[in-house]
Amino acid sequence: MAYTIFVTGGARSGKSLFAEIRTQEFGAELVYLATAEALDSEMEERVKRHHERRGADWITIEEPIHLSQALARCDGQYRAILVDCVTLWLSNLLFKYEDAAENIEERILEDLQRLKSTLHGMVTPVILVSNEVGMGIVPDNSLSRLFRDIAGTTNQALAATADEAHVVISGIPLKLK
Image 1 (tube, helix red, strand yellow):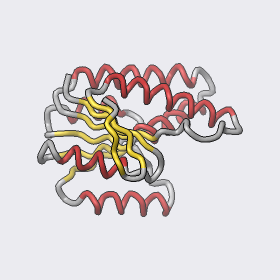
Image 2 (cartoon, one colour; image 1 turned 120 degrees about the vertical axis):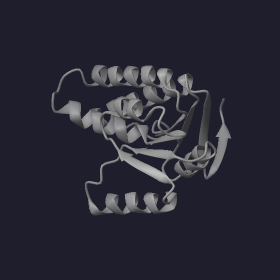
Image 3 (cartoon, helix red, strand yellow; image 1 turned 90 degrees about the vertical axis):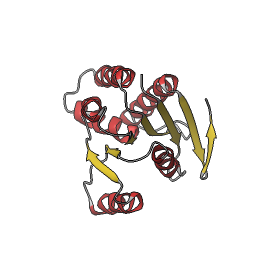
Image 4 (cartoon, helix red, strand yellow; image 1 turned 45 degrees about the horizontal axis):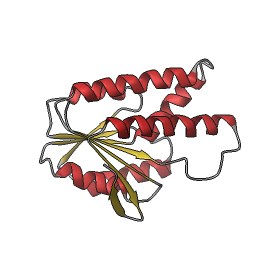
């Protein structure tokens, strides 16, 4: 298995910047595997700012749903792959499977298992960024609670799988393992 680093933290905690710096330690060529979809002008602006911050040394690949397949396609082609972020990937899956209205959690956990299997077979180091969403109030609706639960389960599984795990709070990274 390639080296895997898991980075979590709250919104605007500095986790993405920390993950970018760690990824750059592997040298060029680097891939930024983006799971976000720019569905409005505010999100388009966020994507633009992230892209400008990274600069021309990064190859950006956008993949909102098929994360495991995108990682497999990139494996062995680059020095390191940064996935930013797992939480948006889960959100994309949740909305995709919500339309089917059946076995949402089961289907997402199957995607998580595929991701873990893919990570296990990789030769290229992977840095995974995810939000820590379960530290606030209990959401007031079932879809939000389901998302919180799935995100917590996913973060636990990926942190356990990873060689390193970090949490970033107020711009300060703390190594968990």
